[in-house]
Length: 185
Image 1: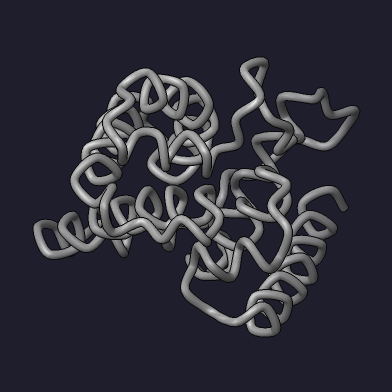
Image 2: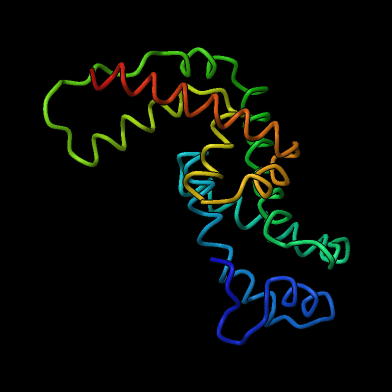
C-alpha cells in the first residue's frame, strides 16, 4: 500500500525534493494521491465535480504550504487532513447558505423490497446507513474501512487521539450493524 514507486522514492522523499524545487516530484505526488483523494471526497460530497475541485484545492494548499511540511513526518496524513478540512469547509459554507439541508438529511431512507439483494442494492443500503451516522463517526469509518487507513493515521487526519478514533469507529460499526440488520430483516 505504501510501497515506494518504481523510482524508489517514498512520499516523504518526493516532498523533500519538491520543496527543493523538483517539479517532477510534485507531479509524482499528484499521480499517487489524486485518485485516492478523489474516491474519498466523492464519498463525502456525492459529486464528482465538487470532489475534483476539492482535490485540486488540496494540491494548491500542499503547494502553498510545502515549506511548512515537517520532513520528519509522514506525508499521507498531512495531505488527507488538508482534503478533509476542505470537505468540512464545504459543508460549513453550505450550512450557512441553506438551512433546509439539515431537514432533508433527516428524511428516512426509502423502504426496500425484501428478497435477494444484488451487490448494487447492498451498496446502496450501506450508503444509506452511513448517511445516518454522525459526521464524525462516518468520517472515521470511511477513512478506516474504505481507505484502509490504520487508526493512528485516521487520528492524525481527523485531529483526534487514536483512542477517541477507536471509540468512534466501534460505535459507528455497532450502529451500522443495527441499521443494516433492521433494513435486511
